[in-house]
Image (cartoon, rainbow, N blue to C red):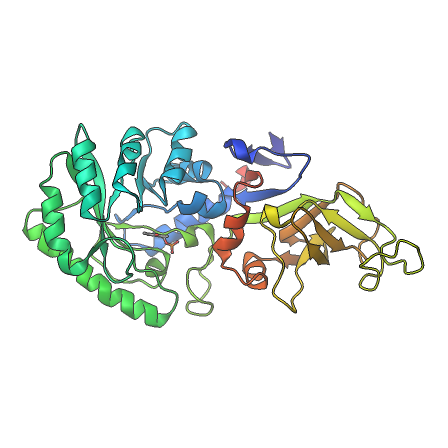
Length: 395
Ligand SMILES: *Cc1c(COP(=O)(O)O)cnc(C)c1O
C-alpha cells in the first residue's frame, strides 16, 4: 500500500490487525532504524559485529519486521529476549536468521529451542545438561557469565571451570560467551569497565585452554556509547538502535540517534459539543473544567494508556493543537477539545509524536506516567497494530 510517497506495511502478527472498531495504532519509522544502525556502526571499531537486541517484541515495536530489517542492514545474529520473540520471527517465515535468546528458561523448555533452531543461553549447568542430552546433532549455544549484574549466568569466579566442562559435553558447540553490564551514569561506566576487564581476563584464560568462541560480547547500548574498552568480537545494543537513550540525560552529548517510534495515534469516536454547558439538565461532570467540547478516543487503560501522576496533566494533539486529557478509564479516554475548532468524529489524535510545532515525546509520556520508556510501550504492545513506514526518497 503506497500513501504520501511512503511505503506502509502492517505488522504480520494476528494480534496486530487494524481494528476499525477500536482505531488505535502505532507508527514506526524504519528509516530511523536504518539511520541508527549505521550511526552505531561508526561508534564501534571496524570488524566488530553488531547483534541487535529485539527483546520484548523489539521494545514493543514488532519483532519480526524489525529483526528482518536488522538482517538487511548486515546483522548476522539477532538477540531475542525470550522464545516468544524467536517464535514470532520464525512464524513470520524467517527460518534462516540466526537467533539467540538471552534466557532464562527451565531445562524442560529446551526442546522448543531445538525445534525452532534457536540458540539458547546456557546460564547454569542444568541448561547445559538438558541441551547436551536432548540435542541429536551438535547444537550451538551461548554461555552467559555473570560479571556482576547479579542476574543470569555463571559467576566470574567459577565460570572458567564451568565453561571448560560445557565445551567437553556431547552435542554442545559454544558459539558465544557473553555478559551484560548495563548502566546509566558515569559511576556505572566505571563499574562496567572494571567488570569488563575481569571478563576479558576470563576469555584470555579460556583461550589458553583451547576454548575460543566466535562470539564474545560484553557491551550493550551504554557500553558502546561511552566506549567501554573490551577485547570482544561483538556488541549487543538494543535501546539506542530504537532511538531510546540508555544513559541518563546529560551524560553525553546528543549523537543524533532518532526515535524509531514515530507516533501513537487514535481517532475521535465521540464528541460532546456542549460539555461546558452548566445550565443544561445534563450538567457534565467536566462542565467546570472545560470551555467547549469534549471528545472520546477508545484508548483506555486496557490499551496501555495510564493516568498521570497526581498533580500532572497528560496531553494529546489534535489538528496540531495540544489538548489536555481529562480522564482515562478502562476502555476510554476523554479529551478537552475547548481549543479545537470544529472537531469531528474520525479526527486523528496523537498520543505521542509531532504535529506542526507541537510534540509529545516518549520521555514525556513515561515521566508523566512515572514509568520507564520501555514500560510505556510494553503496556501497549500486542494491543494495537503497528504500521511500519519507510520513505524511499531517503534511502
Ligand atoms: C537488554 C539487553 C541488552 C541490550 O541492552 P540495551 O541497554 O537495550 O542496549 C543486551 N544484553 C542483554 C543480556 C540484555 O538483557
